[in-house]
Length: 458
Picture 1: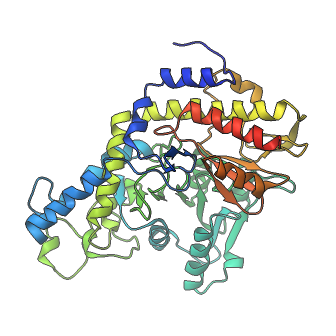
Picture 2: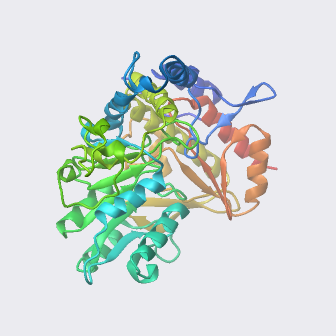
């Protein structure tokens, strides 16, 4: 095993890239270029890059359509009726589930509504839903409209757990205490896996244990978690989860979504669901008989005939995950993320006083820098600990780092864009960056830090 400490130099970053066993996977993606210059694309948390094999997989569907028409469902090299099976195995490794517990269908918010139909069961005073405050807007609107469908007032049904005064993060202890305090009135706990704004990784295992111990159904929105952090949905005993595949899973804009449903629900004949013909028992689906008989896996929640073009785009990306190996991807993700924190720390410690904030979220320390430079709102440990690459056992963190800019935030963001950095601006003053392991490099992380420092010095 290599033994080194991080260094803030171009030569060291290049050396890290040379040692990277996944370095050749960058060549499998199309890197955005402007005027012939590759951009530093740190937007994997918003839309993953296109893999070069996407066209190939799409063309297979188009050729099959051209050759067989509707018979493409039954004929050709890969009949469409069985295409779904090619997606569940690689996804099962990424989210930690049995292949039969996964179905690929629809988009995220549609799937959340469908899971609410099955798993939100208000009964008397036990009708409340526990969630995070300021969840992604689509989740908020889903909650609001779904709750009104039952004739309830969302303000009375939703119990939102928010950060304490003066803090950015939701403390794990506050989530668990809320579950314990409201256990007699909660019908559902539905939380995010990773907060889209701060990048905070929630303790899915602890939340699930607390909810299930109280007899409460528990689910998760994994939009910013799937393909980003380690997940063990089956072993953690999560009831259900939904995710999109256009962010860290690189499956294209508006890509088909995914759903996990624990196997204990698959043959529950009393469970509510909105049904469609593609979820009907495969052996007799084409007999078009009256009376819904669901497939006895998570596929039984499917509705309509899937888009094979979206399937193909998803398959193209998942083939790269399989080739690289999910465990290998996670190893590089931690190293890349640790190096990013190290570089950002170098920027701030050069001229700013480091002040440990009082905010502690479930053991996750938040360090802040002032003096008009950068304040980080993403959980991490004391930056000094990131100097050693071997320190891989910290609290879980994903690719995203959210930089709160106390001064000139939008000006700094625009300057980054002009210098070839593609990042994400969130009002009123946050820049989100997310170097991802399959196509970002250590050299890009170093260059990003160098550009930020030069801008701050202007």
